[in-house]
Image (tube, rainbow, N blue to C red; front, side, top):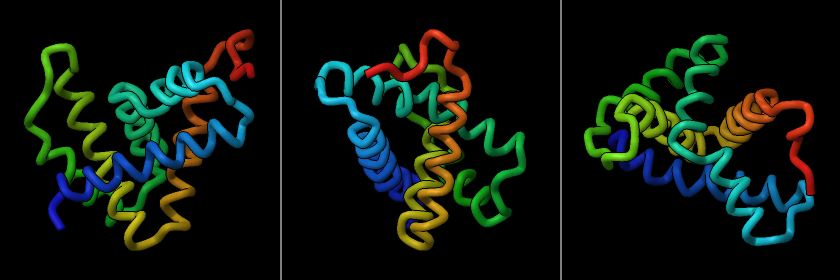
Length: 130
C-alpha cells in the first residue's frame, strides 16, 4: 500500500481515537468537542507531534520509513496550509495507517504519545476543562 493510501486510513483512525479520547475525558458539547478535536488533529498539531516523535527518538526505523512514505508523497496543499506542516502531517497519518493495520497496540501507544505531547504544551490555566 502506498504512503497516501496509508495516510487516508491513518487520518480516519487517528481522528476516531482523538474523538474517543475527548468523549472519555468527559466532553459532551459538540461545539467544544470539535474545537478540542482540531487542537489534536490539525495539520499543525500532527506536524508538531511528528517532530516530537522524531526529535525524541521514539520511533524505530521501520516506523520512520512509513512516515517518510507519506511525507514524500504529499504534494497538494491549500493556500492557507503550510506545505511543510502538510507533508509532516501526511507522514504522521501514513505512520498511523500502517500501524493500525500491522500493530494496533503500538499504534495506540504512538497516539497516546501525541496526546501527551499536545497536553504538555498547554498553559497551566488552559488545561482541558470540561
